[in-house]
Image 1 (cartoon, rainbow, N blue to C red):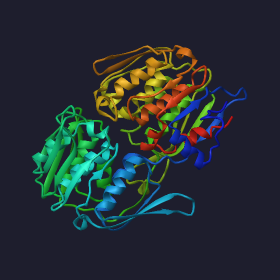
Image 2: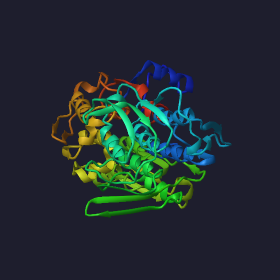
Image 3: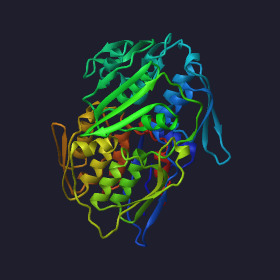
Image 4: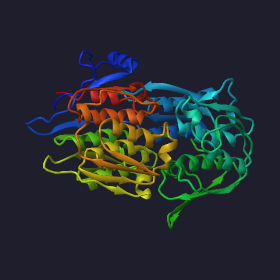
Length: 478
């Protein structure tokens, strides 16, 4: 396989990769098959963003020392880390004997937290904004102003603020967003009341925020919403011994937690993020002869939808279950192998809202795969893409259109007419009007199928969720 080159004059050492990010653009050359056969790409552990956020939250809530091994050191997770440091929690970086990053968390527990002097800035992290808003609202005496970057200050916060206020939370918000409220938020912590919440929008972030708020109240907090949202918070609560009840019935899920409750110190290893592995799985799907192997990947059913769809399209996807789950915060993991038989033609897909809900973060990269498969694919139920780091539905359409792949947005659906060659041989100087990491990485993968080199802008945003993305691509050798 010919090499994927980010400016051929650069070397793949750390200093050059950092300079590459400063330049904020790269040249991507098309990948071509080795005539001799399969090329294997063994991915390092790509720590999960959702799990890292939550592990930091529970470790900071506990009184004592917690150890988090292989956390994700991305901008989003570092924002959560900094937030707790501002409250007085000590979080130190340590390197293990085998070179893994470890965060050692020393906390006096929730009752020891102090109101920060300045704002808590979550950067571009919607997870941090919503989960911390729920948690901080239920800590009496805590006074916090929560803000974020320009993109985050445009994202909807009313969906989490209103149910928190129903629990007695004191939150002042800025006007705006598509639901009337946005950052900055001024939060005055107080003792909250348990409530039953019926949500119409399927949001794991809102669900988690309400459960975290309920941990500080006396009684049962219940959240009901459409089934299929990520359930990492519930699994961790169960793993750590909280009094939690879960049930799914007739397309609705109900989660109930009884407070007050505080976790004990934790010792955990963060598994690999399926949403990060997805970009390299897509690369294998588009390039027969490339075999991608990823270890310690979460197998949570709410996170593997993208890989199930690849399998349905004709890609060979294999999971080899890991026997140990206790260190992975109650989650099962596996070694994942993805490859495509050179003699197999992929088929288009039609996915309903219930299916796309299980892969909402992977929709941009799935759209890239669909765009290069002959036939029409249709992805429904994509309204949540409108309120991500960007209007991802519009930006995904822009990316495919720029490459000459016909596609149409109809309401909450994206229809892709795939199988054509990329216009002009390459994406040329492609950039985004937003700061969306997943769109940038999707553009890089798409550029590997172009007939000529492409220049992709916006590389620095990959550090939001996947700092290893560029180094891994840089080291696909020719």
